Structure formats: C-alpha cells, structure tokens
Image 1 (cartoon, rainbow, N blue to C red):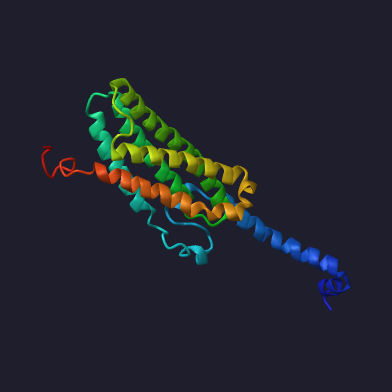
Image 2 (cartoon, rainbow, N blue to C red):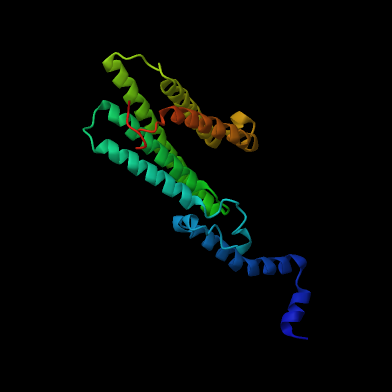
Length: 229
C-alpha cells in the first residue's frame, strides 16, 4: 500500500475534508481573480463572464452599440446646431436636456447586462455616478427654461410640451429618489426583492412621458422637409 493511501485511510473525516477544501482554494482564487479583473471593455464587447454558458443568456447582449450610436448621433446633431448660434439663457435648456439624456443612456448601458459580482460592482458604481450627473443636467435644463420664462414674463407650463416636461421632471426626481432609497434603505419597501419589483413602473412611466413630451415638438420643417410657415 502506498504511504499516501495509508495516510489518507488513517486520517479523520475532518482532516480529509480540510485537504479537499485546500485543493479547491486555487480554483476559487482563480475565479475571483478573473472576476476582479473585469473591465468596462469586456462589458461593452459583450464579454460578460469567462463562463461560456453565460455568453448568450441575455436577449439584448451585443446590441448596446445601437443605442450608443443613436444617442451620440442625436446629441451631436442637436447640440451642434445650438452651439452654432450665440448662446442665450434659453440655449441651456436643450443643451442641458441633451446632456442629461446622454448621461442617462450611458448609466443604463454600464449596468446592463451584468452577471458576475465584479461586473455588478463596477456597473453599480458607474450607474450611480452617471445617474447623479444626469439628474444635475436635467435639473439645470428645467431651471434654465423656468428662469427664461420668468424673465420674459411668459406663462409657465402653458403648452403641452411645457406641461409634460414639468410632469416628466417631477417623475424623474421621484425616480432618482426611489432608486437611491432602494439602494440605501431597501427596508422601506419591505426588503430588496420588493424594492426591485417596482422597477418596471419606475422605468415605463418616465419613458412614456418622454415620448409624449417629444412628439409635439416634431415638425417637418425642423427635419428639413418643409419651410416654416
């Protein structure tokens, strides 16, 4: 009988369990190391994990570049036209709203999808910081148009665009508050699971308000298809 076999037979179950755990430590350390070495480049390229089985587990994997192209094109085209003219107080309303939208999309793309603990830590940090920046930009845009109307003596929220814009701004403020409290004090909602359950409502309501608020501002002359009457 080999010495190692005899030793394993004489050892207690506790000792054999400890030996087995020691053998798995290098594997666990390797997994943790690969998880900690996660970078944003992997997230953007769809390399969500070193586990091949998880690569196709998200139906929107690899489509983030479409949203990125759309928001970059929209932001550059609109902000370019605004910056080509002399800046006035009103100019900061659309410029701030564009910045808020751009930052908001980046915060979404940074967090979706995540699978490993390392990805989630990076995604959550970027999501929080970018959301805070977009919150400041949207607030600045609202303040700019409010001050502009106050200085000119115009009525506030008289148009459909203005009324829906105010409703959307209030909804976004509420969404930021809910998102922060879900992270900081999930007990307010009865636990983390219940807090996450309201996420769909917090997302769909502002998205609907954004769509309804933008539609009244779409005109053919703004798109270059006709002349303004």
